[in-house]
Image (cartoon, rainbow, N blue to C red; front, side):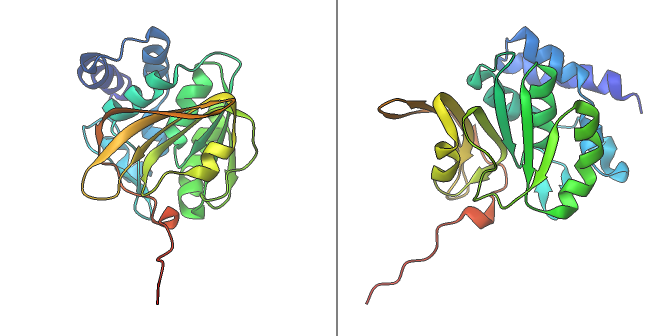
Length: 209
């Protein structure tokens, strides 16, 4: 399979046509081998309009949705980023000149994506998704959805930092952009999306007598 040709078709037919106009982002998507973030026997599915499985139920986000999330973040060269459950996004951001940490909770996922992360110059770390590694990030992104607002992730942002994530409590979800200001958070809904939810972030059930 000609992955380079498939990559160009992906950008032309799934990214550009969905109003993703950032030229640097388009160039990064053309440069990063998305197929390297999947097991070899599923690499053929990397550029289809589906969410191919990495391992253990974890999936890559649709190229359309991820590119729109990344454009909303307005990444800039020299910034620091945390990619939570977002290995492909991590490599794209690193290609754009950011310093990126990719956080994974499942060792099976990390085993698949670690070689591609290393090739991209991204630091991969294993830690629970509920506890972001480090703090003071300029931006945070996730390729998976969260069932509730990820307050711990927001705490890991610096003032002026941005978080792009899909919040999904049911069959449909909303991609949202948070910006952390000195006096609080702003939240803006971006578009509809429904990637798989990170179940470990679900709120603990409350019981009342």
